[in-house]
Image (cartoon, rainbow, N blue to C red; front, side, top):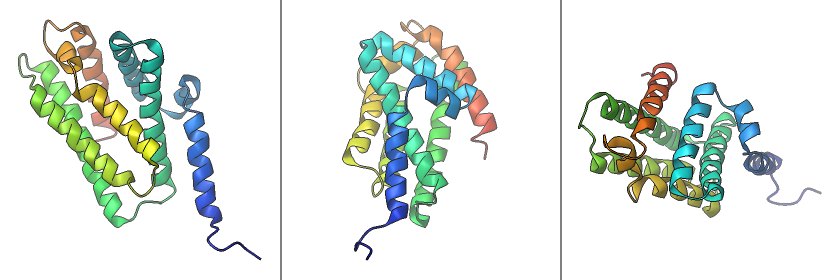
Length: 188
């Protein structure tokens, strides 16, 4: 007799999320993502290594990768309801706008506005939390917060976007990759 409340599809999803979470190493991820996304992740890792020790930087990138993989897995397995799909579309558009903002800050001297960028990142985080609220654990939600906190607190953004910033030399590459991603994957 089957156990009440048992759902093999749900169990399968939990196992897939767990396996993908464990596989979020650099080598495995390179086989799952395209070159531009890999290059962007490498740039973010370099940036994180400049701000913190290597172990914490790797955790930050793993957190980002785990969240992206889990959201993709949920989408691929049709786990989002109509309301969540609408939130997902808003989230995609918000991320596209952030990418276009980064490109603009690179192309137009002295246009960097930290307040605007931080607000946009926080809005994207809220949408992401709303999207995954009924699907991911508190631990996974904490991963989202870890990534967002890195970019929205402190002076990391200033170091990238101000002309005399310590990491300003990374901006052309970041902007170039965002341009390709926007053109290829996020076009409207």
